Amino acid sequence: MIPLAEIERAREVLQGLAVRTPLVRLDAETEAEIWLKLELLQPVRSFKLRGAGNAVLQASEEQLAGGVLTASAGNMAQGLAYVARRRGVPATIVVPEHAPQTKLDAVERYGGRVIRVPYDEWWQTMVTGSYPGVDGLFVHPVDDERVMAGNGTIGLELLEQLDGFDAVVVPYGGGGLVTGIASAVKSVRPEVRFYAAEPATAAPVAATLAAGGTPTPVEYAVSFVDGSGSRELLPRVWAHASGLLDGGFAVPLEDAAAAVRLLAERARVVAEGAGALALAVALSHDVGRRVVCIVSGGNIDTPVLARILAGETP
Image (cartoon, helix red, strand yellow):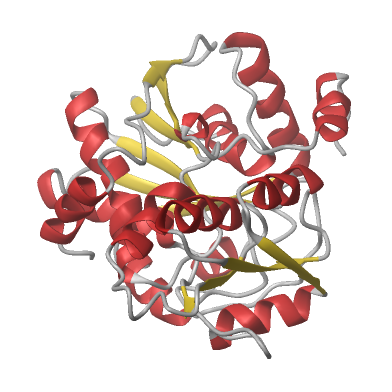
């Protein structure tokens, strides 16, 4: 677990940068109450600003002398570029070739430099924490305790916003989001259950849990759910997350698309694929009576959204 004191410190650091996002109830035909934590209302339209902000704002001038670097499919890229601009340092982002254009355009608006590479090269950058020819502080999008502590501020808000919730469903990419939120919530209410939601095309958590906890790599397939899922678990993060999770679900792409549509129709919320995964789980599985779904981001390419709203699964 991330220490509660570090999460509380992150909340202080993030004052004036990240916003306290609303928690609203969804009108849905379910026995359970479903509540939506709308992290897509952050200035960069995803929760990633919390982790990036906590890491960069706590870094020293010396550490930031060469700027900052990360590997990201797009949302951490935006968060890091946004906060780097605030601190007046350059940001370089290594992204996979399939990263959505809407996310890359936003990175450039915030002044970040984008390096587009094949998926394997991108994954290697994340594992090694470096990229040839680029200096700067590497801010890992997941495997960084300050990043996870920043994510944990969502959990502090949940504890203040809603009484009696018994389950939280969180999209799982690298595990930093669920680790942060669950560390905060379980420090106060250890009985609350946490579930991971991944796209079925890239679901190593579900595969690992099915294998009795033995880390199990999977075949990775690119999909419109670009902000969640991977081909394998990050060992150090999994060491945290595995002790906090009560289960995990691999979400069919059709269910993720249907959840994007439902959010648009019932809540007038435009979520990206990863942002709708938690709702897809809550609609199709009995995980609790009062369930919080983390709507992690809303950075979706307009043509993809149009196809989903027309009833397609991209």
